[in-house]
Length: 226
Image 1 (tube, rainbow, N blue to C red):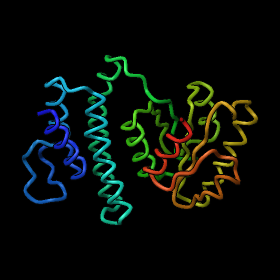
Image 2 (tube, one colour; image 1 turned 180 degrees about the vertical axis):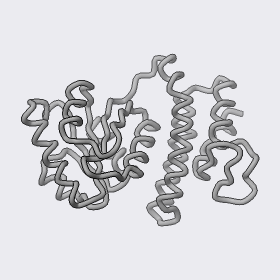
Image 3 (cartoon, rainbow, N blue to C red; image 1 turned 90 degrees about the vertical axis):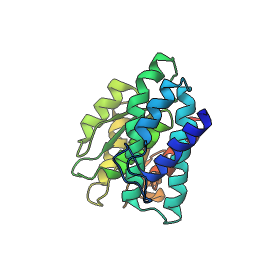
Image 4 (cartoon, rainbow, N blue to C red; image 1 turned 90 degrees about the horizontal axis):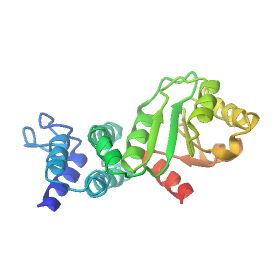
């Protein structure tokens, strides 16, 4: 029975359905239990929280990632699925803490100064939470010093920086330098991403990793965390 619920959670993540009012990608799903209702049922049935995350939410997003790579899904489709996972993770976080499940690591994410785009960052945040990381999202249009101060205060293992404009991505270089000036560069791994950002740019500014999209960002952070 637990496998049935987990399969349904996975399917509804792929369909991008948060609750039963949502239509989903396919016809005839409206009115049926969606991710939040199914996650609540799984909790009520005593299914292990980690199993809900791994076999339901993460498995579903793995399929979404594959569809995105094949261009079967586009950003709005991926965002719908990510929002479903985000809603589920909000429900599960108190249970993770109660069960003494430690996060895999702590990450600060931000979109740099002058850049108001946040869809990519939001997807990365949700995917990282689903992958078991504790994520503090500073928001968008965040100035360099605020980001450096947050790293000093929170002492995360990772810092994720996003930019969607060539005019704002220069802040990434400045932030890496400010971390050096503050004497904390060696205490945090910096991952950068966004439409104009490349792997070569990441190397040029001294970042530790580059994520072309949310799925790659999670993979890069996992590899740096091993």
